[in-house]
Length: 145
Image 1 (cartoon, rainbow, N blue to C red):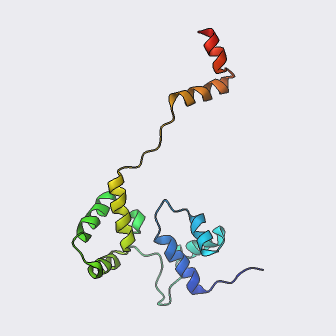
Image 2 (tube, helix red, strand yellow):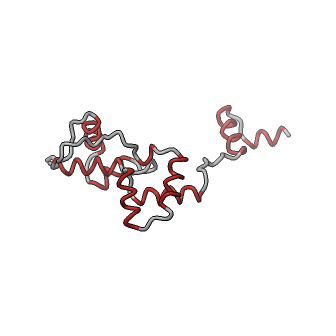
Image 3 (tube, rainbow, N blue to C red):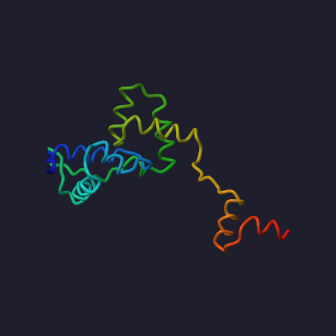
């Protein structure tokens, strides 16, 4: 039997998706909310087409930048601007920018970690893959030397 979700729960689910970072998978959010992945995708599509609105009849998809749409320089400026703010002022600042304080905190941590780099495969592993592809074993190569 399929579950029924209220309009408000659909709106809240889409809001949660929009407030997450790129490194959070949509499947994980769907699992956390207890909804199917395709169902969550449908709700997002409805919101994009302005068919899923809040109680105030506002669209969920605004022209404001989502947290993961901010450029590095904008993120850095937000970190600098919020440095001197107390908690109340920080909340007001975040509200005006369409953010949550945890977004700015995460950006700060990301800047301290430095740029993300992908691990480079070692040359020996790449060589072994090529050898396997051509049907040559390491033992055969060692015998030739």
